[in-house]
Image (cartoon, rainbow, N blue to C red):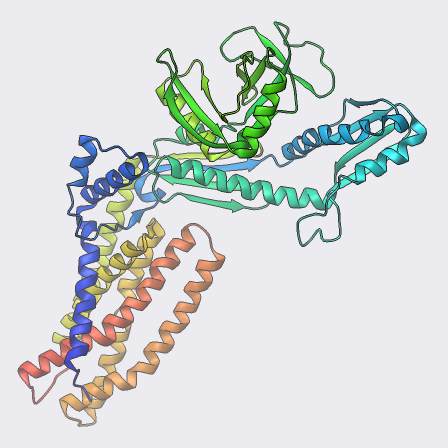
Length: 554
């Protein structure tokens, strides 16, 4: 029957009212955005400034505050494509393996003789032993340090490729371990970049892997690509290394396992350090901007239990000796150990301002990038260009809506007006659902909305044409309308299911702009079916109840 129960009428109108309510914040975009940003900032810092409180009061807390996030092409921002130098990790792995391998070989010094590390190609560890006839024993000891590869493709393989020839033992990562390490390095870089960007409160960044060793980074609302590079392009690798000597020669000769690094605050001063650190930034659990005893900006840090234990043991056994705090291959400071540091906390100070101390604390909290990253592509999209895109998208949506509404009214009269109401409601529901989801609207997404406006009336056209056929057969108005809706249902569902499948394929297999188009198209399909079948039917039923027409010209 054409009649709609009261509870179903209330449900339909209630869903539309909710859609209007959740879409409303987008009419006051800047005010609501400032409200949300103030709340986020106060939650993150725990500080309530007058400016933040004023921004927070700009929108009532009891109203929905979800917004459709604007993508890079609408808001403006920065675009970077970076390449991760995965081979850097091979060298770091060999450097970290050397102390353990040295201790294992030294324990058998009576058999294999003296042990020393010699210069080797990047990613290799070469060790010389005194007794060449015991090289097989040295290989056996080294293999005892190997572990299974932690990946499905490397099942049954070990992580080290070990060879012995003459009096030299050569160790490097196996091919299976290199493949697993490459994948872990890129995934770790992705996560660290995401944490660094999230720390500064940017909105809806796009951070995704491309190919084997590349990462795409798009951050709406940030000033420039250079600003983004400063945030994520620094390795921020913090280490605490034993000091061998201090001098002014940048090319001083060093032994294997040692490195010469410049001082950050003392031009012309260079430190020779043990390359293997006592502790690293990975042992940090927290880093906060602060001020030192002289009132200068600094960074307070704290180690986790394992790092605090190693640092405490080292400082206890090296009182009176200097140690270096190294950040990105520069010695920040090299204080002398006056007493054992067992609290697991410390302070980094030097030539920095408040902004740089804040940025350094963000980088240290997020962790060090496991390998260097080179930026192959960078673009800055200005907010003016984004605003132009918004205006163009808004204009196209308005023109499309007006054209569709005019056509429907011209073709179907009053029923065309009902279809027009459904089309406009459909757009509002799309925006409300995207606001609730926190979805990002891009320029292709606007194209998806415009396309939805054009196709949203397809269901109405099918229904109205079926009603016309039923009227030609001489059926009464109510019966013709009821049969028209029922007969058109299968065709409507079939048409939308096939489009839905295509949208899902675009979403899961596409990337970037294609996904933005697929999101709005998918949401539009669901809302257009709802408005065409339920809202249009409700409007027609209300009209029938009010006018009770004996004839219908459609």
